[in-house]
Length: 115
Image (tube, rainbow, N blue to C red):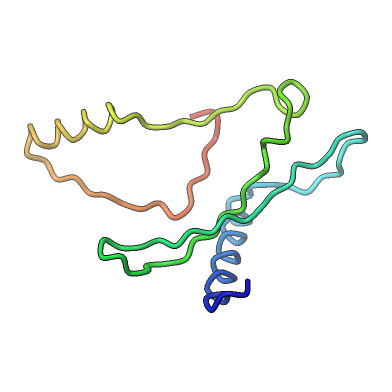
């Protein structure tokens, strides 16, 4: 936090915390006896436009999941992702039917296992 942009990074961190509170990402509970809490860390990224100018400062609070052990700390993981083939099919359909395609940036996305 010693950079010249520290106020921007602090604002980005506050924005992330507000978003997580709004989306009820967690609830505080007592840690079960014999278990360790999963740590977390801040990841910072500067978002730039096509000309390389800074658009905004982005901060993410991420869990240190690499400390977990399967079967002890978790039983399964779920992370839906899109494949390049899916994107290519959509782009081909847009071109074939002369459709308009709009791109958007999702500021915060919270996914559930049951889609």
